[in-house]
Amino acid sequence: MTAFAQTENGAPKAPKTLQFLTPAQIDPSRLLAPPAPDGSDSQVKEMAEVKRLIKTRTPEQLTQAKWDAEHEDISPFFATLGPDFDLQSCQPPQSCCLKR
Image (cartoon, rainbow, N blue to C red; front, side):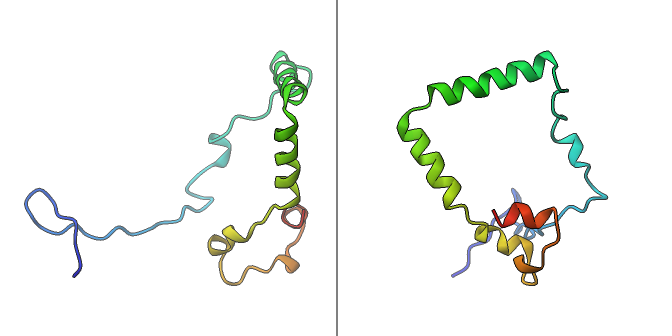
């Protein structure tokens, strides 16, 4: 038995169609602000927070972070990257990021 979602008037809803955005459709720089300029008050505050987090981390947090770094795996992204994706044939800068 197959269940279909229905509209208020009882008619079945059309199935959703997935759409992937192209670089022409979206500007990634709009999603994230640029990094704070070197030496700016914002950068100094951000780095102070990073240093505070490092100084106050627990031994368990450090152990977990090291484990995470040693066991990184991009295989969950293979479905998105497509069947023709081949890590060995990647060109820099992608290869340096993916092979770490």
